Image (tube, rainbow, N blue to C red; front, side, top):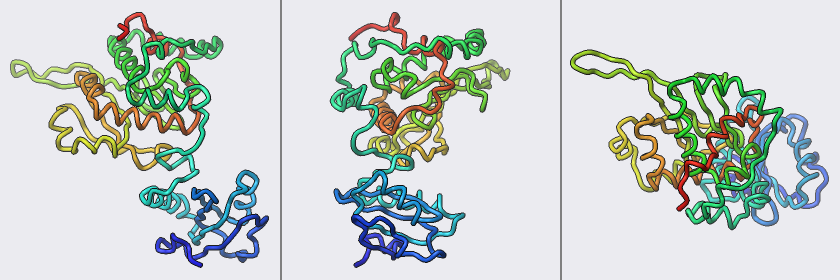
Length: 331
């Protein structure tokens, strides 16, 4: 009996349904490596372990439907790299994975489903939700709000503040379903984050999805080189969805300020692409249907993975600007 993954090094494969311990399958010296759990319903889970016997015992507390295990020995220093490669290989083979991190697509029920139903998610991805989806009640946390009011006032004094808020509002309302329902728990926006020179950052799940930076641009006028401050926006989206329609060359020709970034995050899986564009083209870029489809697809996948771990940095004052409706015209 051989693993279907033997051709990628998983030469150890055995039946495990109902077994309490797999200690009999391993010596003390060959337990470090990558394992694949095969479940009765045809799903899989990829993991790394220094001691796979102990790791299996932990999994068995939560998963009683493990049927087979595939395993290959891997040096401890190589575990994260090979785990990621294995997940990507199984995704490319169209296997359904129960992993949350590294994978691109989440299967089964999620925490998001409890507040935004799968039917509502489907309508949103197809641009079918009514204007009322933008006007639901918000969560308020006064003590937390106070923590970042000073930073918000600092940002407010920046001459680019209104432009920042305009970009943020368009992004939040167009690329996040039920933004007031999902605020704080599933997405957050931070004001003047301390980790780099960004003015505003949006996070979903375990990663950033939008960064707004202040940049200094040079241009020539009457043979005199002048400098002017403006905004540059970094955004993450589904790579596969984006390139169904555009090639890199076509994108770069259409959007003159666009550049292709190379920052990717483990939490978003392999199907992600970073793009960077100036504010003068951002709204045209955002509302370009193939691009907006790719952004929405990526964001929904992250929302389905779980809550936002960066909500401790959420600026409610900034979010006030992002989810205001007094300047919106209902369709």
